[in-house]
Length: 213
Ligand SMILES: C[S@@+](CC[C@H](N)C(=O)[O-])C[C@H]1O[C@@H](n2cnc3c(N)ncnc32)[C@H](O)[C@@H]1O
Image 1: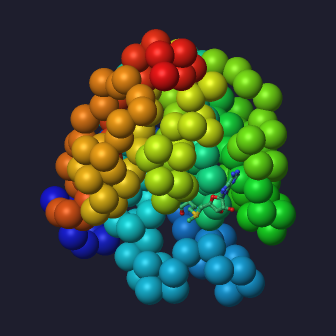
Image 2: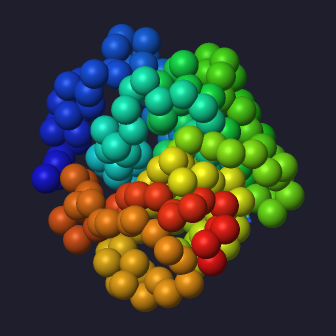
């Protein structure tokens, strides 16, 4: 379990994707986030004291669940302050990361941060997820976006049987998965490395696209 900022930075530096360019991009994100958080409430002020642990590594810990050679779109739902979307895009610059966000000031922030970080393959879909054109994607991530049942109802149309869902769910992961009734799936809960009580729901929908509902 990672509990300090030093441990978070050490874990990150050991990540195969974390080269000098990625680190520079993440440092820029951390600096810009601190500044922007004075203008709009992107993350809790308290969490900024442990930003590498609470936001950067908390996002980056999704990467080992997706092989580096995976191609196709990584769709991040409700990216908000940039998590995990901007972190994934910084660490996998060859990956087409699409960040869906509906609030205008957050859309503006995501576009500005993405441009400053030089994330040429990342893109912001600045609209409600319900209005985003359907396409099959390789990965769907969502941190603090919606309860599991609703999340799947909104996002299943982007999935195939190969689409990997990566859903950091905090302390409710096991309960939400246990309560899920309407979907056939191959989900399980992985332990978060940043919070002993938090879990990440990982896996695929059987049949994808909600066809098996
Ligand atoms: C609680 S925040 C989490 C932000 C970020 N994922 C994080 O973990 O820091 C949820 C975000 O989802 C966005 N959101 C909620 N419903 C949405 C929808 N239907 N379509 C697009 N964005 C949505 C909100 O505007 C908000 O920025």
